[in-house]
Length: 153
Image (cartoon, rainbow, N blue to C red; front, side, top):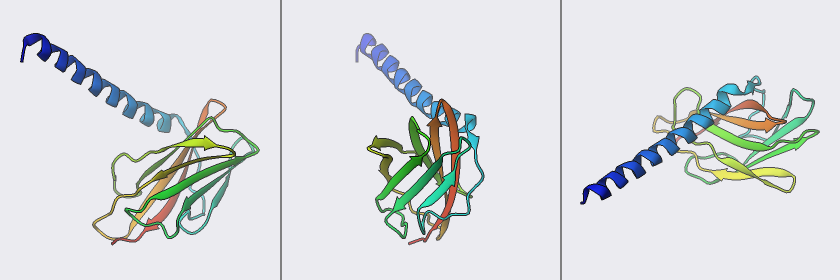
């Protein structure tokens, strides 16, 4: 390999690393800058969950199909009433054990934000998951954590 090609490759790899780090940092920054609401007494593995927001509106989270299983495609839906969101992501992580980065950004489709994800298998059996809905509403970030369990395989 010529020295010029080596330098170009090193620069390309460095830029790729910076882009990945910047993306992960920006996602972490959104969550730490968000107003976090308390965990509602609703289990999205059992039913749709509706939560009152600080601005007077409401958010409804739906995760289907039910029961929620690991390694199964899940349909995600977030609907807002009496308020409007600009951007919605859902951060999935273990409540007691980090399961890596799994934060799909939902697409606005008609009257709802929707997307899909797959939860990994926990080798220790049944696991409690935390799905934190991150929504940008009027330039402010709101985080709403939901807890649910997924049976081991």
